[in-house]
Length: 115
Image 1 (cartoon, rainbow, N blue to C red):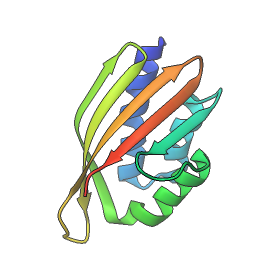
Image 2: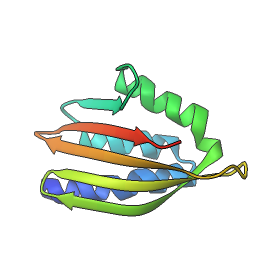
Image 3: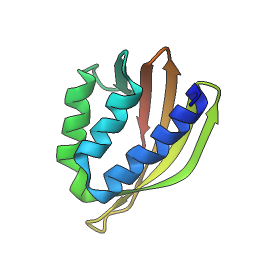
């Protein structure tokens, strides 16, 4: 599978695992694609260990959010996604724009979180 296909598969599989409540599958998507390293940046927030970030995101938000992919565009080894994060609590949905770059087994992700 070429890098574009790996990235496209990752984009959809991680959301599927999130929505299904499959933490191991969700984290496995990141482990599988980022075999040579992972960087995650929540734009506007301090840098943190990506695995701590993913686990905290799951533990703090998973029960409250179901994700709809509004757009997932892959161009070569980069991708942009627009997600609607539907709140199970009845609060208004939030939106994220997510930018990914996949190069030599290393994944970089930048998350822009709308309020």
